[in-house]
Length: 554
Image 1 (tube, rainbow, N blue to C red):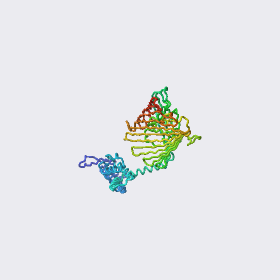
Image 2: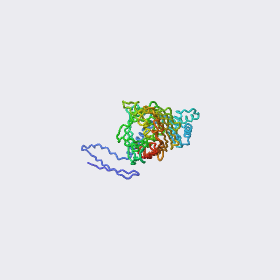
Image 3: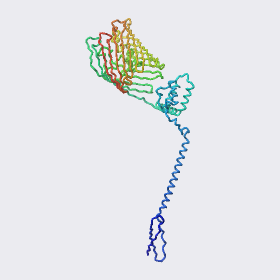
Image 4: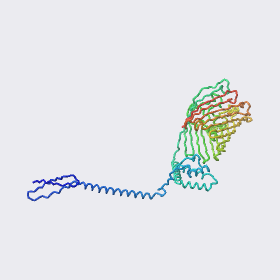
């Protein structure tokens, strides 16, 4: 038997009416005993759900607070290990140094008094503290390393105050230097093989010669065609300890000697030589130091007397970037000999150098050897009396080497090919004066006294030469310059062998060139020089030589 029971519940105040209906079947077994009533299911209650969410939120919030407390405690423990002075940084320690600050003015006063750094570096420019500390450190080092007899107490107080104010920056600067020095020391100790570097120079030149007849000829005209020539040099350089240099230079060239077309060596270019562009070893040398002030140079091939001594007019000396003529590059007396040799150069002071050199032309020939073959020896003292002046005094002793390749034919052969043992003592002087940063005036003189030791009465000849040099630096572009040469190529002024072997007239060499440095690796040098009375003979026509030399370096 099944009974349906309907229950009505009155709605509470504020709620919409609701009716809950529950049908619970009641079954009576056949024995007449009633069965146990089943439990009544619970009703859906929103208040219980709200209570559960409230408990979950409280537990989550409590866990978050515990985590934050642990992190905060850890940070406090770490903070205790930081020095007090690093916790709080003063605003003044972060500010730049302005020209009106006491530190800036103090450093400027030290600079003016002791010339410890360039005044341009403190020329009313705002600096960071590290920039300022760098300049301060350089100034202090300069004062410490200089021989200042009197440093007053006020200066010492100022330096101490600056060191205290910028102690942190100075310490950082010192640490970086120590770290760099340590790295360099490690690299030096770990170096086991030399580093080989390749350097190259390529010259292209367009050259023309003009004039009437060839020297000492009334019938042979000078060919006035333009020629294109080149020269290639590749240098392999290696160092074994950082203070030495081994150089092997390869060369190929086809620039003709204009003496072959003008009949005078006075017309030769400063970069000539024709090997049909066959590449060969042109120079082999090794340079190393004996102490800080002494340098030794060894040439197995390609050395010249001028390579052992400094030049006081270096802008004219380079074959790729100097004078366009052989005569204009250097004093001709230095061109007595070349080949294998040895030289030593010593600086007695910053303004005083003494150099010695010896070269021999045929050192590999067993029949002649190092001392019997043609040779040349040089000694030179170089002085710099002031920052703007320089002077050199040169002495050369040579044997069968008076051919300088720049003078008349008589200077190359003053004894009519009859002497086989010609000794010569040569004297030279050269000076340079930098009038201002743009203009430099220079000059040189040379005298060769040659004697034929194997001829009766030992005849002798006197050969003289001179030149005036002028340069204008940084004309048109930085590192560009204009050069001018006015001089007399080597000339025999006296010869006891006979008056017929003296030069009767005087040739003049007039040259102008402009070295234009387009980039670090490219330069163009147009130039022109004029030879009056070639071969010191006023019956010869003037000779004009013009060239445009383009030099690539890498």
